[in-house]
Length: 95
Image 1 (cartoon, helix red, strand yellow):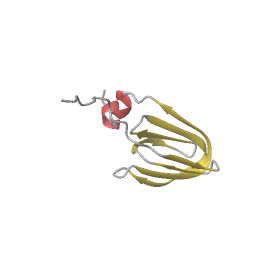
Image 2 (cartoon, helix red, strand yellow; image 1 turned 180 degrees about the vertical axis):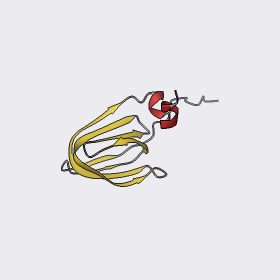
Image 3 (spheres, one colour; image 1 turned 90 degrees about the horizontal axis):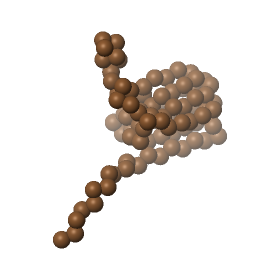
Image 4 (cartoon, one colour; image 1 turned 135 degrees about the vertical axis):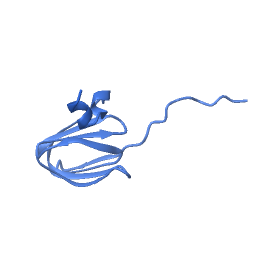
């Protein structure tokens, strides 16, 4: 009898950047913080930080994981999410 592989399933994520002005992303679980110069997203692959100018979120649907934004994008960077990032604001305030 063949043994089943216990390799972890990697969820698919699609990131489309058009002319550094619009960004479309799937796999978004939450928005950690945002301003007109920085958006930090928690995704199914890790934390994603988008930096730029005049950044604006056009669509966020955490149920489907869809995210759309526009602005002038200077950088996009993934980083490991820590358990602290997943705590609610109340948990961070009343530590």
